[in-house]
Length: 353
Image 1 (cartoon, rainbow, N blue to C red):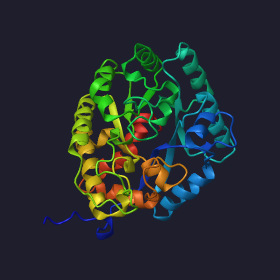
Image 2 (cartoon, rainbow, N blue to C red):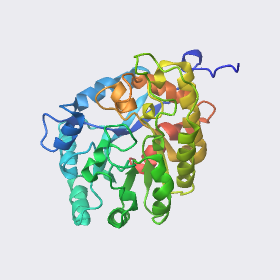
Image 3 (cartoon, rainbow, N blue to C red):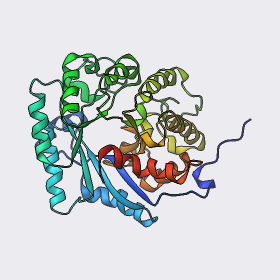
Image 4 (cartoon, rainbow, N blue to C red):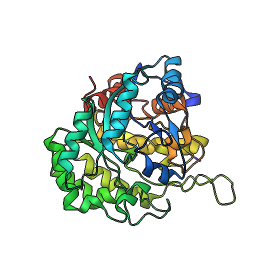
């Protein structure tokens, strides 16, 4: 039997001096008027405010000697993209989240008045850097049983990566110097994304959440309530994901966020075997794209489990545990490469300096 890969608990980790978190969300469904879709999708009120983020992420990282350079606030399915940006800007002006250095705002790129809407968002804050419109679609939404995301109930069953209306919106992003955060299923990378984004070499694109390989070791917990013992990876799922990611990596304008890793392996934090399996996936991405196009991200909102696995597990790493895991994933890379992974790539992609 082959020896298992070392885990963070058995290593002297080389932690970064500084981090950027290029992906997190503020949410207050009970206290805002523009989060009605999100509240419906969540099945009730949820909340994560600047004070929660500071307590759960910034302060713990500071206690282990890591400087927090700043963050990028990413849209959380608001009814109105400019209203969400204005809300966070107001909290920042009040001194609650001055660390937010950039925004990825929400905009439906298929709308007829897309350019007008983008200009409205841009005028809301000089820190708007890009747009996200969640696209994970392999058919109609089935309550999380497939890779189709609840956000696509807004255009249920339509894969916008294949529509001319969406491509028209992408052209507007390129025109106005905005980036695009791409969240979609692996099969969409293969079928349409790579060819589509190849047409827009001046549009910066960041693939969210590892490119979203799904449950490559299966469910975290079995139906009888016991932990899934499987450690054999779903190579069929990974084959499709790998094909799509390699096609995207061939485009020099495409980057990747190493985030929400519990979607790939729900409950990965539980065992050394699962941690090693995830490490292999993360390392494969970094080798495909290079450290100069990869960025570590916490995706922090609500709690560790939700941030990590998007409700596919009830466990997840806290901020420092995830930092240490990243340090382990990145072992063997040079100090300059690790700086890129933890901060430099995000600074460059989102223009934070």
